[in-house]
Amino acid sequence: MSKYFIPVLFLIIFFYSLIKKVKPYDAFTQGAKSAIPFAVSVFPYLVSIFVITELFEVSGISNAVSNFLSPFFRILGIPKELTKLVLIKPFSGNGALAILTEIYSTYGVDSYLARCASVIYGSSETVFYIAAVYFAGAKTKKLAVPIIISLVASFFSCVFACFICLIM
Image 1 (spheres, rainbow, N blue to C red):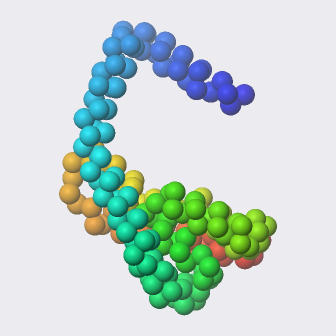
Image 2 (image 1 turned 90 degrees about the horizontal axis):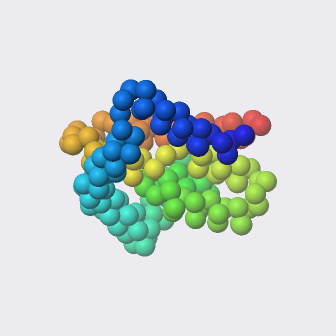
């Protein structure tokens, strides 16, 4: 059933545009044309996020920060082994996926750590990547408050994820 969702949605939009007397092909090409400048404007933000993420990992700062914060995280219920995942997830989905895969291979997919890591991975977001894309399109420079709120929400989702996995 789900394989028909996108084609049916496409047909509904197509017929709706005909009813509203909008030329669907022209509207589509106009939208595609406006996406190119947007992609160009987002590119520097994305490159900076990718470079910072890679430098964070390669320089060893990731391990140092992880070791420093793990006692605090442990008090909140996040195991030491998941500290690196919690720290990298706001920056890089691919980096977080690599850590998740490493946790699976080290501790097994049915372990408490793997379950916590899975829920953390699924319940948090790559905050800086999303912020880069959103704020490049919004043309606003007031980044601090939304990013801080997103990071706090993401962190508490990690704490709650470990709590839920502990009681289930």
